[in-house]
Image (cartoon, rainbow, N blue to C red; front, side):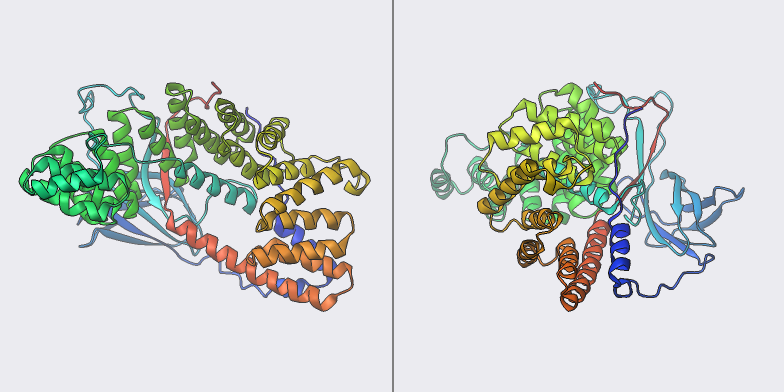
Length: 551
């Protein structure tokens, strides 16, 4: 059984203990009003067909785990449904309508007083023995061992661990997505042709399909989609059936932010051409429109039609972004098998392991990514972010961060991350001040980090922590204030500054910083909550299968 993550002690417990010791607990402990255990919970959502249209008059069922008969309702004219649950607990949800198919969410938890949204897409069941519509069988795998059946608000990410762990998972997921990029569509513009030459050609041949298309395609490639659209529209008017131009026009509208128009044009093309690049483009557009369930299915279809590295990576990234780590782990594992020399596939696999609570495997995969190109800083940055959620970094993680600073001594982040790894691995049986060699090295690395990047607030915070442990509170206060000046929203800096003020007898300043801490912590929690609600969480089920094995 893979080793599970070593979690940090909850910062809330540490803070509460310290505040009791300081006598400031009332500042952070406003009276709480408990909710009645019987408070009704609310479930609502929408139902759509495979084309994204609302399903009117579908029957929706909600059944508690310990009840025999489900409750039912009908979707309204907007395809919406709603239930009032008499109590919290584990439920199953499904919807069906003749001619539209069905959708199922076999298990989810509804807490007392909670309001949850789950959207459903009804799809016809495939008849036994049916074959894929593609003429070529997918090279990826015949059928994934998971099913994404719905989306819900990210009200409870589940699992266990501190807020630091949850935030790190979210950060790595977003970092993984940022490594993706839309694969090139059909043929590029005429190679070696300048914009000036193409514009001159359009002037000479205003009714030339090729001239208008080539200029429009070049402008799209240069990130000037709005300028490109008139030329591509002119080409489309000259020949509406030209696939390459129609694709370029849909892509231009997507890049220009005309997402509804881009979706319509792409779906129109898909009605005639079941191509991977179209499914992938439609997936990008659906994600921008907030239709995440439709997006992940389009990413999947693109990968089934063309199991290329970009399509597989984007499919896995979409799953990871929407808090579906086990399906993402399956996709990235298969992708790594097909493309063992893809650095970003290994990074995605590592991030999926981390999100699945397999910390050691995550470090191994990201370390492998760093070995593919030791000079590339991206894998080291992943490792550096991961160690924030670890009490004791592994030997392999520390070794890779040491290589990072050896190869990139001019990097502020390399100095900072290696300093933090040494600080976490110091001899915990003695005060760090007694180990002068380690303390001096850590301080030197952190000072180098802020020298290279004077706006590196996290490095000033770590300097303050180091100086506080050395009981040099005057210097620690200076460090914390510098961190706050750079990053006023850094709640830990406010809290630790209050501690340092308390140690120097500056009680009023300590109280003021605790109040600042309370406010920044509240704002940080609200900001995190808003960000989480912007990213819908996939509801998925796994088939019986053996645990993921290292390859």
